[in-house]
Image 1 (tube, rainbow, N blue to C red):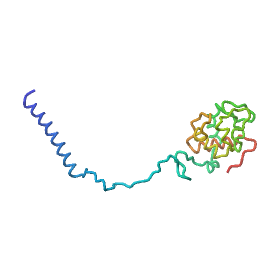
Image 2: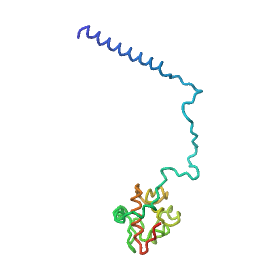
Image 3: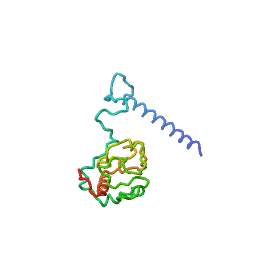
Image 4: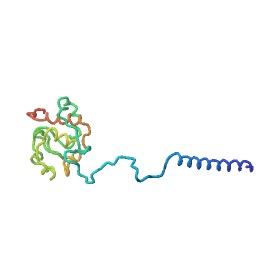
Length: 181
């Protein structure tokens, strides 16, 4: 390598450093980078420090869409297909034995934790109330979130139409299905 080539390489490196430095200084001149503490550049939003939500406000992640309006257009066939996920732990036939989970025959409007011979979790036993359409749908959305401490190991159904289809199928598993809302 000749001395001329080395000089060209060093000159190009020096020119590149000078160009970057000049551009940096021009940028500082054009854009004011000094902070003026008395000036506000944004709106302040007061956010409460407590983790509790304001009364009447439902956090977005806890809100589930109601299924009542979707039940009239829900599909029994699709609900039966969805029940295949549940059938490894539950039966739905009248008089059939409990599995890992209780029998789901005549579930709608039945008191919670009421199947004889099934050992419910303490959380579900103490929860109380009865299984209405919306309660079943919320439970199916995220069981562990709906009743903290439940033994049911199911990730949940995210799609509201899937929950409506499954609830309609479960409603149909009764001698006298409860009227739709």
